[in-house]
Length: 221
Image 1 (cartoon, rainbow, N blue to C red):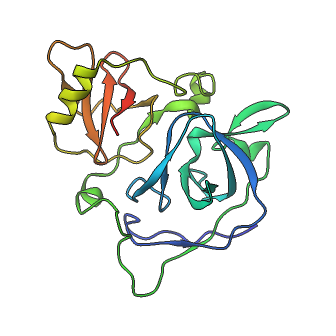
Image 2 (spheres, helix red, strand yellow):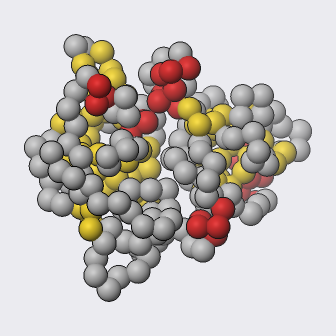
């Protein structure tokens, strides 16, 4: 078992991981950002499609972010949207340590380097704090794994076009931007004229939100 070195400050400093160890397999429950570092402030290297298998080298000690290999590349994914089979049943990796052993990854900050390339800018450290709630990790609330995140409803194209053409200031939240994630009550969401959905900019990524449930129904990529 590896030990973890605590991240400093708001974790905008670049981090490198130890070499990959014996890997376990996991599957994504939604289209999931594949990031350069273990946090939403790191650049997305791409998107892993829903129901895609990835190899997991290990996760942070707090279980939130895991180092994964996808399509020949190593990166990071949010563990609330990864499941592994346990006795033929999918178990969310964030909940999995009680039933299956997951390696803990060790990190060291590269000497002489500052913030990771592509990381969210100065606004991140000032505004972070609220969490993106829910998704398949909401097992404690009785949610069925993957049920709310595999796919959202079909959002009308005029709504998506309006979102793209009407920028708003970003809000920075811990967690991952994904279909099914919930927006905290104290975060403002914006109306779309003559539409049933609303929207906002989370971590510099636009999302369409169901105002009744405050859950993300589409990530505008």
